[in-house]
Image 1 (cartoon, one colour):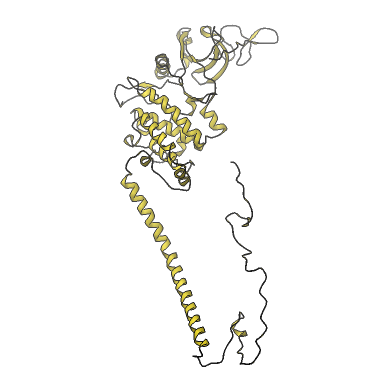
Image 2 (image 1 turned 90 degrees about the vertical axis):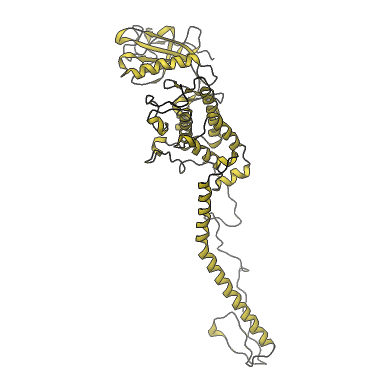
Length: 430
């Protein structure tokens, strides 16, 4: 872990100053903003984030190592749920050891009565949250696949524990994108161990929009975290909050807002299925499907971008659902019905032209053989009023010169306005 140099603020008169608001310090806490100075021996460097209940500081321990120091003010906590979540996070982090989960360092409290403050020190992770990254720039498809793979591996490790551990609050604000390219999962205050495969009647925790419908009713299981990951990916790809994309039935309608290949969209549909039985059964199954989707031939991905939808279940070797087959047949029938009038018109025009051509050939053959008893007539490209019969022995009229241009289409239309058939095009970055 990187060592952080301790910084102590000072005013021009030499007295110690608060590193948060720069007010003069006269005790163990700033009398102006209430920021701690060095709780538990961890010297505060700056505020990382804060809420109505407390703050998260970047602090430095006696060994010079940086920690994320979470502070909870007992007097400002509205109920026991926040206290339980704080203590739960400390217990969960103490039991975990994973490279993409912050390491537990220490937990302690200071003060007494209404002045009690609870502290949790954990490994400080350099980087920016996914939420900050989305505000700066949305993820592209390759980045989304990479993020999904990394988070699924972390969830796989949590769900395979005995008992299984469900995070219950996967969202962009709780994913840290680190400089080494890894994504870390943080904030285990809502995490819960499952005594069974599914738990009903649990306390409602999580963030609306990222929670699956059943979690609103207190039901949680491993697929609840998978749904939250799907909502997180939709937010990262579209820049839209998932809560803004929910329809009246609480289905997350992302199709019009996420541009991506068919395998990616099918993967998101499985993660975000409203029915638990239609989602991936586990993070392991989701990882297997992800690898199969990414291993699809480039030609399939190119066809997908043109609108060809390849169900992820086919990539996984499963049988396509009958409903999908009926939809495809119905779509083909509709296209055929719309195309039928155009085909009929073309056939009629073609037959008329063929009939006229045959009639002209037959008339020419009869005239050449002398079978038609009438004076010879020469047909030119003038209007009918200009047709003049010519008697034998009369010299033919002078022929008209051909129009300029050699028969080229001077107004040839191209797909791009203002372009010609010989002009070059270039694609710009968005």
